[in-house]
Length: 249
Image 1 (spheres, rainbow, N blue to C red):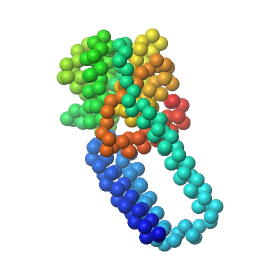
Image 2: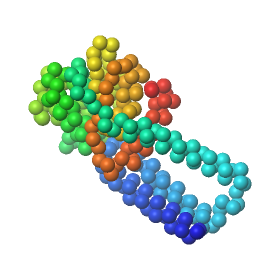
Image 3: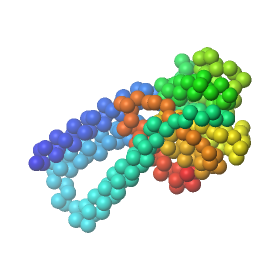
Image 4: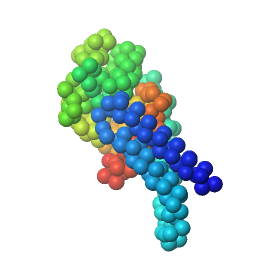
């Protein structure tokens, strides 16, 4: 039994290492991929603890407390993941007054794959609803060559969307900034608003919009790569907790 548990822990550690490396290779612009490398360290340490029978040397009360913390964390992740997944297919066929496209990492070659999914979804919606305006939202990060909103606007114009329909918001640094700054460019009490972002990010994006005063916000989910769902959903679980503690949702 001990050998089997060690083998499972080592296998999970190797899996975390490869997955974290794959996530890093996408160039998402943040360092959350490190959580998978931390997972590698955790599983390797756990394998060593099992090998040298470490758990028998610590007080039972401490072991129980640690187990309770781990189980509570897993329960939280499960509940949050269910909330996130429940909005994967959100969309609307309404003729909204305005749609907000939330920004993401951009590269010198153009939008990242995550952002392209959002913009392609916005393009499809704007083509189907020619009376809808579009706000592209996102500032310039320290590792970006230009404001995200500028790159987003250029991408949509290149696809054929009339530039007069696109409003840029180039100051925001995160989701809460996206929403707050965009609210200055519309009338949230009178206008119907759609939030376009990737499926895994939609629950938090819409929840923040409603908390900030866009009560009639509709979510429009853009697709994302299935392979990266574990990473993106886990990151959302952390983001939901952070925004809840800060009063953003």
